[in-house]
Length: 135
Image (cartoon, rainbow, N blue to C red):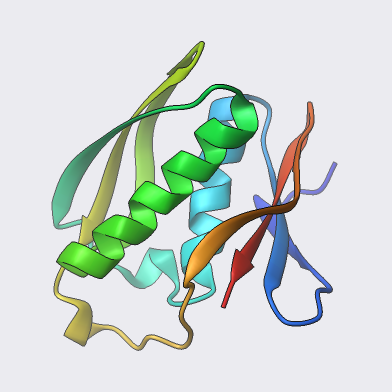
């Protein structure tokens, strides 16, 4: 297994990545970081605001999709940029997360735009999750 929390894979028009972790929670958290890293370095984002996210899903793929889409919703509606997932619990069909970030988006150099999460080529494995996002 790699030392990095995520890696980008070749994809024709979109962005495809694998997010690694020892637990599903760590994998989902690293997927969120990978998705935001397409736009801005999450480590450069000040942890000014704490948000709570609660989503449900019929299976792990839908849970991951709904979590990442909720993050994009916060970006679109509140200009919320992710710094870090500080806590996540997945219990069955429910995901609870606390995240740090900032809404003063003008302070940061944004280098891309993630429009949506897709189910295309999504994988949930023991060691990683794989996601494709629409740019």
